[in-house]
Length: 77
Image (tube, rainbow, N blue to C red; front, side, top):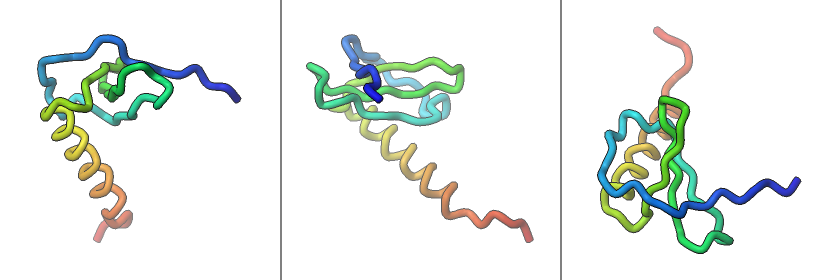
């Protein structure tokens, strides 16, 4: 299937709280500008500049959060 390519044309410049972000994806290489799409708890999406320090930090935190949730034992004591 040929999925539509999601690209970012405008970026969120001010940092947003990492707690409102549920996931992210990096835009396609076919886009004219590199971008990161943050999925928000509200169901919305937001584009951010992958070159910004706050965006890199948020991506790291989300990666840690995802790996932590995968490593947690499923059954409780």
